[in-house]
Every structure is written in C-alpha cells, then in structure tokens.
Image (cartoon, rainbow, N blue to C red; front, side):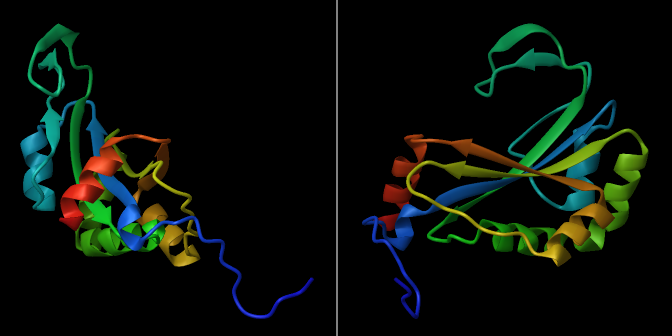
Length: 162
C-alpha cells in the first residue's frame, strides 16, 4: 500500500527522550594540554600530558604513565534528534581554528569528533557532504559510539525536564 505524506511509528518518546553527547578528543605524542585549551578557548573535561602518572577519572592513581597527551571537551544535547547537524554547528564554530587542527595533524597529533548516542530510543541522521568536507579540510576524524540502554541518559533527561 502506498500512503502519501509521512509515516511515523509512535514509540511513545517525547523530544526530551533524545540525548547525546558530542566529544572533541585530541591526542598527541607530547603537546601540553594547556596549549590545546589556549588554542581552542574551551575547558577540557579531562586532560593529561604524555609521561604523567595514569589515573582514574576520579583521580585515583593507576600503574604506569600516559604514552600520549590527551584532551577532551564534550557538549551534551537534550531534545534534539539531528546529531550530525549539531556536530556540524560545533565544527563550524571551531573552523576559525582550522590552522591549529591542521598543524596538530602534521605534527603526529589526532583530532576526533565523537558522537556518543545513548540507548533511550531509536535515533538516526545523515551527515551532509559539506560537513564531511569540512571535517576533512580540518583534519578531524568522525567517530560514533553507541551505548545501548545506558541509564545515564535517563538521569540526564530527567534532570533537564524538571
């Protein structure tokens, strides 16, 4: 049967049920994370320098030293389904720092934009060719992580609805 218009299956989800994070992750053999913070004007969620003592996110010491410098910053998005559009907006805001990302890649560094999807409901999107070209021109890799039925999504969604 052909039906004109849009077909939508109601899964009982409201717009507040959609939650994802977009993480900018930078890894480099030796850069000081403070240089990344200064260059991007963003505060890291977590960072360390190559050679520092390894630790848990809570700060407890682990055996060994970090082999690479690491820096990450995340944006939380609630109530939006179009994760590639949100990611594209973030990268467009960072485009004025393109030379930093390109230099980082030339100097053995790696920048990734990771979209982290949490399993509250079905969600999908399509990246535009312009977004893909922009990522390539800036030397940024795109990653997607899926966390099915992860309960943090419930806690964050509830805290943002109240």
